[in-house]
Image (cartoon, rainbow, N blue to C red; front, side, top):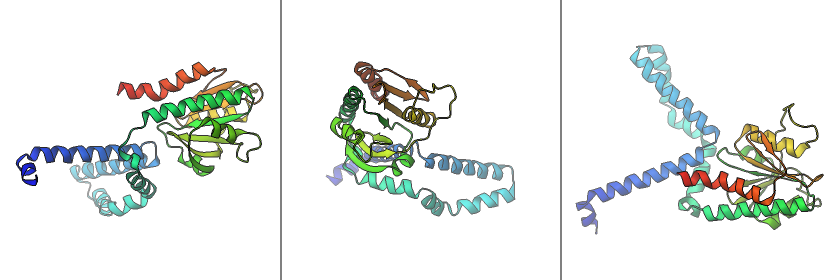
Length: 255
């Protein structure tokens, strides 16, 4: 078998390239939406500055940049420590090579049904679904759960007797990452004064990130959805399902 592979070297080359492409792709997914992306851009600018200073014979700038780049490995370890730790954790997970589209659709259905159930009982709720931008900073200040998304669990979290019913639930993929999370409040003067803290928090987060916020009003029982700093109100089950399905599955089909 090894002899056969040596005779067909292109098979090994193809396998090598495919594995490296997959690893780089997964690492980019982990870094996407984090502060590490900004740091990588900064390092890219430094590299361009080094090339430009060498071309223009700016020896002092070239010496400074080269001195920094000589310690680049240590700098990357220090700057990207959280991302490196997260990447290693993802590599150790069984889901590293799997795609859970069906599970995501099931989670969306559970969110829709939970929203309707809470609205019918006029129980206030704020559920946030993470997209491309990482919500790690908001997850860390809440109560960590890491539980599978289910209608029953969401209903129990927002029940008035629950110790973590205040704040937001943050959903990541098909998992409830944390509950009782505090979100930034929008300062927009264009919003109706009738909107409460939950609505303003949901809108505030979507002004800063690409997350989707679902708000259930305990006064009216209306369901609202915040996206890109805009609020859609009085949603029913069918409309909610259509919007969420379009957001989370349509882009994947286009790819």
